[in-house]
Image (cartoon, rainbow, N blue to C red; front, side, top):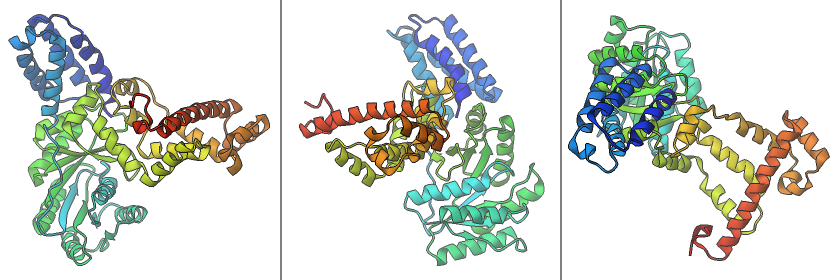
Amino acid sequence: MFDDLIRKLDGTVRKIRGTGRLSEKNIAESMREIRRVLLEADVHFKVAGEFVDAIGKRAVGQEVLRSVTPGQQVVKIVHDELIRLLGGSHAPIRYGHIPPTVIMVVGLQGSGKTTFCGKLAVHLRKQNRNPMLAAADVYRPAAIEQLQSLGNSIQIPVFALGTEVTPEEIAVKAVTEARKTHRDVLILDTAGRLHIDETMMNELIRIRDAVKPSEIIFVADGMTGQDAVRSAQAFQEAVDFDGIALTKLDGDSKGGAALSIRSVTGKPIKFISNGENPDAIEAFHPDRMASRILGMGDVVGLVEKAREAVDLEEAEKHARRLGKEAFTFEDFLDQLRQIKKMGPLSQVMGMVPGLNLQAAKEDVDDSALVKAEAIINSMTLSERRKPNLIDGSRRKRIARGSGTTVQDVNQLIRQFQGMQKMMKHMGRLKMKGMPGGLPFGR
């Protein structure tokens, strides 16, 4: 996500940050460089121009030119303006006073609209909501079946009446069904087209007028660049949506569309989606995203991801085993699975200050986790619990069974032994009464 933008802004920001003395001339040079980077990242030319002008006006102020650290001051200005460009503050879902809250999802066909509906339902369920999905796309082949299959996989009910009923009638009856079954959120999956046309827009207007949704969310494909901006403008004029969801940000998108859509439409980005898993969705926070883009990480987002992924009972079990100095391959496997739940490694690294630039510059290989899991799964139960049993012949058998090499098995065992030593050390410190088991606890 935003990898291209991060890579290109990195050099420019580093150059500004390291500048000992600033003048209007080198500020102007830096602004030209930032404008070029934004345009190459597919940011709309007007948005790029306004953004750079705003930074330039603030950067030539006397408080910056006379500052002890002028370069860092300019980077702070870039950060502040980036937050403003991305919306300023987080825009949460607005819930209606009388349930169900109706969320109408709109967008072009192929933008990931149906998949987003399922992800949104999972996201809201984590917030102790009780959502229901409704299939209001009666045109696309297998659209209803796709939503029903998705609903079954995430265990969320789907309301459908087939293809012989009008979309607005489906929407109205879905509201009644949600109320009757005590569902407090109804997510409407509406029909899209391959291109914008009057028929589609008129249908969306009729649905909107029939159920009066609390939220209309426009789903934009992050890989379509400026086409997404034009689509957003057309949908805004027709149905006046309330917020934007950016999908497919794990692909080869340059990130410029995200910066452009918010500025051009004036509507907040509410969600970003960056993977195929049902939980590959996160609420959009402009300040956190600005920090990620500028290489500052997103510690708060990382903590939230960890909180969602980590099983507290498992964590407590590991803590007890730590005290007994009994960390095994089974514990190691549990931890690997918890890491995988947090999402692709590149995204997790992108939230760690200092590591996000590395993640943008390098292809972080998620297959390493898959390989490690396969190796551990090829071990017998006794080998997992007593790793010292694993001799040369066993390593060959484990490599054959996992489709890896003996070198791969040896490398994993070395990594495990290093972690085992660290865990034993932490366990001893805890037994000595040091808070958190850290050596600097006293």
